Amino acid sequence: MTDLLNAPEDSAFRAEIRAFVEAELDPATRAKVSRGSPLAREDFLRWHRSMHRKGWVAPGWPAEHGGPGWTARQRLIADEEMFRLHTPPLPGFGLKMIGPILIRFGSPEQQQRFLPRILSCEDWWCQGFSEPGAGSDLASLRSRAVRTDGGWLVSGSKTWTTYAQYANWIFCLVRTDPEVKKQQGISMMLIDMAAPGVSRRPIRLMDGTEEVNEIFLDNVFVPDDLVVGEINKGWTYAKALLEHERLGIGGVGRSKHLLARVREMAEAAGLGDDPEISARLAAFEIDIMAIEATTLRLLAAAEAGRTLGAETSLLKVRGTEVQQGLTELMLDIAGPAALPGSAGDCADALFANVAYQFLNWRKLSIYGGSNEIQRSILAGQVLGL
Ligand SMILES: Cc1cc2nc3c(=O)[nH]c(=O)nc-3n(C[C@H](O)[C@H](O)[C@H](O)COP(=O)(O)OP(=O)(O)OC[C@H]3O[C@@H](n4cnc5c(N)ncnc54)[C@H](O)[C@@H]3O)c2cc1C
Image (cartoon, rainbow, N blue to C red; front, side, top):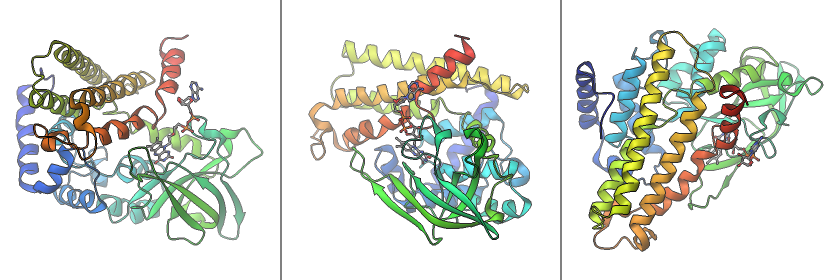
């Protein structure tokens, strides 16, 4: 596949990433990632610790807080190489979400207390935004915080909380003022998952896993020093948090890795020359190149000082459509071999987990703002409709 991130100056950086991964990633974890198998907490943590020792764990953080000082282009290249070499993803809720928010809006005490533990993954964070009845319309959230001596008492419930079973901290949006316009009465609070009144119930998904959870908050005491920034400014922080997700939202690294796997599957199934499969693969390749070119164009704009706006929604929509489309193609190629326990002779590990991955990745067009919502943003803010 043509690579737009292959200028001469990119090669040394690529080689450095490759050498590190080859030396550090254990073969068993690599095999799990390459087959798209579910990962255990320890699989994530082992890789996180290696990356932390190397100082590469937080590419999006400023160097003074522990970031590696990479350019946006280097971050994309690292991302691409890591996917290609089957490294586990780094748990993102601390590194990509609450960490950058604490860097920008947290108190010095919060920064000193939490940032080093996010970098080392001594703390695993989860995100308590969505509620039953408040997903796309997040500002309707109803978890309530009531003032008490020295802090707040929080009651309510959160849902779809990814990997809460691994987490010891949760950052939550809660309503601190029910009297004002709904966006203006929300605050962001940091809650210890072991605090009295916090409980969790796993949600079984259609892929058979329990990756997400319901979280119940029953009069949980949150001291004042665990409120992020100012009371009733939580909506501003929540919007800033989503901005940190924008780089790499098109998932180019992930799509390239998946495309290579689907090609390999087509060969293994004797469909390498099938005209329909070849045409579908070629169409995905073209889409991925277009997403990569758009990503680079937006990156260049960001590096020139322009704030990335609503056009990144385009990357989310097209990127997730390609990724989901590739898992559909995987399923078509695998046929009955996709059924659990029926890997078949030609297929072995290459075909394992195809059904799981197809089902699991339905989530891509839902979380982080559903694709329908992204389309409305594009229509209103980019096309002016
Ligand atoms: C696997 C998974 C993991 C998640 N992890 C987390 C997490 O860790 N923390 C967290 O806080 N949340 C998490 N979420 C929640 C996620 O952010 C929400 O599911 C998402 O915002 C959609 O909200 P909803 O589920 O309430 O659906 P709804 O908002 O009820 O939407 C239902 C459908 O209606 C469409 N729709 C809604 N409003 C509009 C509109 N105005 N115009 C057009 N179409 C519309 C939606 O696109 C969707 O198709 C996760 C979700 C999933 C599936």
